[in-house]
Image (cartoon, rainbow over all chains, first blue to last red; front, side, top):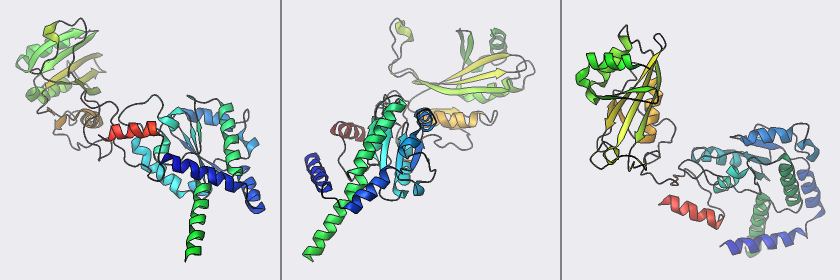
Amino acid sequence: MGLEITTTRLEDAAKWAKQSKLERASNWGRKWSLFTYPFVTACCGMEFMAVAASKYDIARFGAEFPRFSPRQSDLLMVVGTITEKQGPALKRVFDQMAEPKWVIAFGVCASTGGFYQNYHTMPGADQVIPVDVYIPGCPPRPEQVLDALMMLQDRIQSGRGHSQLRLKREQLIASASREEG
Amino acid sequence: MSQKVLDALTATHGAAIERTESTHGDEVAWVKADSLVAVATWLKNDPAMLFDAPVFVTCIDRLDWQPVGLPPSERWTEDKPRFEVAYQLRSTKHRHRIRLKIAVHENDPRVPSLAGLWPGFNWQERETFDMYGIRFDGHPDLRRIYLYEEFVGYPLRKDYPKDKRQPLVRRDDLPINPIKRDQTDRSAK
């Protein structure tokens, strides 16, 4: 199962090489105008503020506007511990975001559950939503966050974000069924 | 520190008190469950007591409680009560405090509620019910307070598996990290 997904991703990555100029241009625009939705649940929020504030200044990467409505944002930052009780809310926020959308798991708790191994902590936000980039650290340094943001920008430019791949896959399936029909 | 409270309590309600002890500067009175409300009412209203501040209520699970160095008579065995429910009270008027403890058996975990006397105990008794499954008789609204209604069992009991999760939602579109999938499988059991 996991192998199939990997090969699909490689194929998709190969297809990116044949992106049209329009796709390249729109992806370039997307990567420099990320609107973040900070899903801040815990202490990592302090580090998120440090990244957003003037010293590290996430605005240099075109992601300066935290939008507190999922409908206006295309980058979901899961900042902090996610509990099982919060799972439905997180999934709902993600579902409300417009396509294409990306997710960053900010800190070990959002990535794997961190040092929590108990009845209430979800072992990573990727149990509920697809995560594009994981940032380790408890909490991560602002430089790590900026590094993750640049990785995400590369991924957006090459069309390898989870939602971009899904859209492409759906288009391929639709065109194939059209040819059959 | 508040030995005079214990003395007054044993003098007036001697039949309701099983035993008293003093540890780490705190006075503890073990109260029989059926006379808890009478003792608490007296503690609240008597002019020499005037316990007006409810500090906390919690529960201690003594399952397999056998620390090193404890004499065998103190250790937990099957025939001893498994839970201890503790009420901590304080008087802001007289500046003394006392802890009431009730021994609760596993097969019938019931304790009379003190939420009617001190409304501050209302949510704390709900929390104790949520985490330990202690039923507070006479509580106005005994529901889970932190966990969701779908949750089965009481997570702070010693026999609850420490990593057993009860997910409300999981994604089904992509396979997840095999290590994590293993964890999820374990928690599903």
